[in-house]
Amino acid sequence: MRASFHRGGRRRGSAMVLFTAMLPTVLVPLVGLAIDASKVYIVQAKLSSAVDGAALGAGRLLGTDANTTEIAGEFLNANFPSGFWGTNSLTPNITYTSSFTSHTISVSATVNVPLLFARIFGQSQLTTVASAVATRKETRVELVLDRSGSMAGEEASLQALAQQFVASFISGYDELGLVVFGSSAVVGYPTGRPYNSSPASAGGPDNNFETEQAGGDMVDMINDLKAGGDTNTAEALSLAYIELQKANNRDQDPTRLNAIVLFTDGVPTSFSAYLNNPSNNSLKATSKCTYNPATAGTASTQMIGWLGNFNPDADKMADMFGSGLYRMASSPNDNNTAAYWMANPTEDLNVINPKTPISGCKNLQATESDTDLDDLAQIPPQDSYGSSTSDGTAYQNSVLYNTFKTAYNSSQPTQGYQIGLASWNAADNAAQKILADTNLNVTIYTIGYTGDGGVDTALLNRIANTVSSTNYNAAWQTGQYIPAGDTNGLAVAFETVASAILRLAQ
Image 1 (cartoon, rainbow, N blue to C red):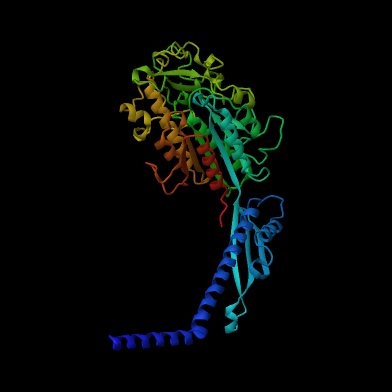
Image 2 (cartoon, rainbow, N blue to C red):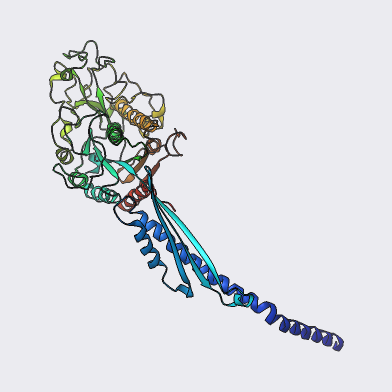
């Protein structure tokens, strides 16, 4: 036992000698280098954060009259205090470049970090560097807001969120427009009336959306917004598309980022139609309508208005009925102001006005009965903007079809269920027409407010062409669908979409 004890004691003594010998030559330098490395890491992280903040802070003002290089320098100095951890010689390099398509600010900086223990090896300081880039693309955005009857009582929340969305963009630089829709849709901004649906006409999103004007600016129109009526999603998308085309034709700037932001709280229940179109007349041959069909090129003979699926929330198909023909807020014959239509959402629930086009018709008087559309032989194959109401079987993705599992039949126009499916088809095909336009390359963002009973998730994914869509097309712009169940969720949704459009990137 003693021999073993003495051998162990000698080994412990040897280890102590070895450790003592290594202390000044190996261990202390290693610990010192670790301390220096930690110091450099802390400085590097702080510098990177400061450079990122400078790029993003100045980036939000790209394209304005602000001196973005000076502002970026101020952000950098504020976020990286002089002498931070003993550093010296902070040297920024800030450049601003502008092209026809975008504005970019690049921020980089170097700073010297004094070292402590590395001096033993002749290294007194180390230079660290960080860089960041922010790009601000020129944008053209059409904001499309659902103000149907289910939004009644919630206008104030929608107004506040829409105004915050507008404030995310820069008046005088970005271009914004507004479409609101209930039973029919109307362009709220720009405010020119009567409405001209030709893409070659004046109008379209512009950069004066927050500039006080005689007819009211975009914020004024949002403030005037009231809820009521059905849900004509197809016409809203078609008007938004026309407005983007108008702006593109006006600016001759094909490089602008084009976007549509669609907010809705329900499912499509109406669409706009040309019933006695001479190229595809939907009236029965036995109908007593005077203009059967219309006279080509003569507006006073054309039956153009919107049709609705009345009582769409019924538990039975038989309790729904198709009804119309009603006036359209965007009729070229309507001389009401945009402010009038913002504040009077149900004025398009009147029978077509003027009544001349429906002279002699027995069952187009909108009496809210199951014979309202009995003058029709079929549901029109297209809406009045050319979007198909009966294209394939895509409608089988709809909430309405999956509730009743009954196939679409265009020969049953008096059935509200069939009008509902036609409305869904028109909205789906209106979106596909927009997405397939490789000249504009429109990105569509959809926000679905689920707090009023639910939305058609499949349709909103299809409209946005998300990767979750049942019809995803990689050749089209990929958008986003964002559901929200309450006001807080909606605020996040609008903010998320605004950030995505602004394209601020490091």
